[in-house]
Length: 576
Ligand code: NOJ
Image 1 (spheres, rainbow, N blue to C red):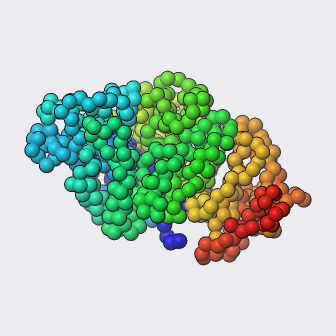
Image 2: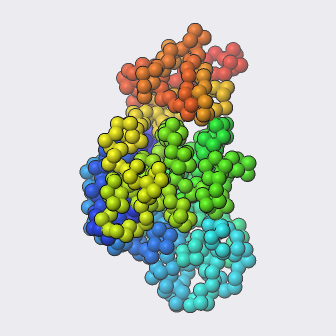
């Protein structure tokens, strides 16, 4: 296994340039502002920044409607500013990945304008057309309740065009080899300007067959390999992080059996079940999701997240489970969206209860994968439900108690800063939290530091341990002769935990607590017994702190896992 796959143990921080920091006082965040905040990000400990779309755009879907892939939107700066930014990030050891919106363009993109105007233009076939209104045009909308159709009539083209998302986002005909070549060209362009990869938007739709005759789209997985090959040739350590909310039995298609397609995918399956686990204090469906998403190529990685810039999509849960999550975290209709999700930020969903927020974060950092944080969550920022759709959770970063939270000197920020309630910027801001050792910000910084010291999470194999308590999740990772163990109490009441580490040998008798002084010594029978406070969590290293010396340079068949009792009596303890 190659040692330097940086994305296996990265800490990714997602932000939108528009709402992060405004340097020129026009009310809109910009690259010059973001650059000045790189020291903050470096101090927090993030190792990669994921930039949401910043290319030229009418911005009717926050930049996911691109009108020029090769330009920075003028409100955020210039290509020159962008390169200064990637350079400054690199100097601090921070990588940059950017959104790649390849499924559709803006309807204002010159390609679409030309395509609709001129049926003979080469661009006509870059989009998906139909002479007649196709059957089923009222099905398959990405934003049900807001978007009425997936086909719209264009009076200039005198034809219907396909759009999986809003009507101002015409789908590209991604089966057209010229379109595919253009997507590679876009990737090559930004790679040249210093990025380390892409968060690819809406991947299942990018690779789906499209057209009026297509009633059941088919995924063209070869396209993923094509992009991977191109990228790896242009820059060996660049990655693609796929947004693909698919069922677990499709995962290997996206990763590629030989690890030859997507490097990373967001784990939507775990995300939804994690919120269910938090809502119901029941770890079982989460365990099931973890097991279902376990198979992946050695070089592939999951992106673990709590909230992102979209709604918390609960569409993969059962109706009953969804009801439970809605009741706990988004009971009012105004908090819900698209008949399937919750549009709030994390902190208000968890009633600004620090114990629950830490629990959620501790889970995110210790579940198998690489953590992806959302800007402002490190402070416990809130939402503004008066804003439409997903805008409620995309308000400007809260830097200080200065007017408009120090985000801008303008009186008119691009989106209103949250100024009322417990999450208003006078209570929740980076400047105050920096000075308070017990703040959420400083807790996040410390937990990131510790996460970097447990690379077993990113690299290792995991096993879920039996605790006989549905509210307690215990998960152990083994990697290169070392093991770590994480235990979480999802319940609002304290729990006594009794568990066996599942590894033979002396080392499993001692669990060193990585976050506080209460270590655990095994009892006479070899089991560990300890109390977990309500919503409590423990990060343990199995054995002493000389683990660094024990770490082998190559994969080993190290952890002498104890096999279940039945098997043990027949075969004795076996190594993996
Ligand atoms: C997924 C993005 O996360 C979302 O914000 C956007 O609206 C759609 N794709 C369309 O690009």
